[in-house]
Length: 380
Image 1 (cartoon, rainbow, N blue to C red):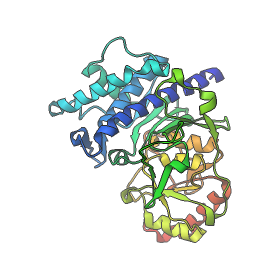
Image 2: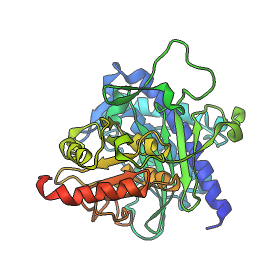
Image 3: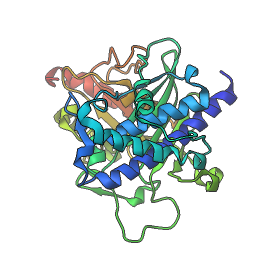
Image 4: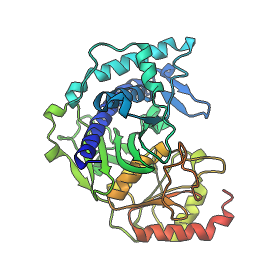
């Protein structure tokens, strides 16, 4: 793959994720506390919203427009089964309106918009075309349209996650974090959660806004830019900045992240691990891949996730975050110290107990050793 083509793929991916974040912000502003009919529950009891379907359709359509549909294969979380039901007419109309409104703004992001308004079938087809099964050969995009939908519907943290995988390796990743400001000072560390501060007069500049992080494998660089709504007025040179992981290696001063929901991870086991390695700060519980973003830019040092028996990690929940942390100088493995395997389809097969992401090798080794010492008594 030519270096110039890789750079173009990353550039397009960043613009597409910026558009997706704009869509999510519009939906979230009208969703929190209202419009509950726009939220559905999937078979695994997780919520899905107009934003999930809308982002998937927009990303599918834009990538196909930029690179040709014959060259684009996407593995994504959602399908259009619920939207296709006869009793989902109102929901489908909301998705159609949301997608068309978003696509109409494509020129502001340096991308092409459709020549005419898209209808139901075109949008359903775009969602359903994201049906790649992944694997160890070839190239495919991996999309989680709204990672952390529970945080999204609560007005809390969530992410839009897009990655490109080639022959089983994540080669680029983009994380859009609409409620995660460029500046840590614009966050409120409250009740063990990161929340965006709400003020009547937001600070000047773009540092209080959400952000988009991105990286290419092997570059040794990870970058962050603010959410923008018009690339024509956007100065990437002055607004984007390189991010690096924290230099903290003493557990006593390190902050660790874990999922908010107990169903997704064992808080009691991570608490025991934290104590055994000398972590003194209370955990930072964050919805979505924003945990990866926090480590990549130095707001936290450790992310630990140990799922309960029977839960299988999906690649779209980790691909984009992994490459961004790695290129920012961090380490991501399973709890046995092995690289995550993105070559086996939808799931991270062969995962050794859990996932550990750290800002550096010293903290990572301490966590790995602590897992080995305490795993047999964990009941996981």
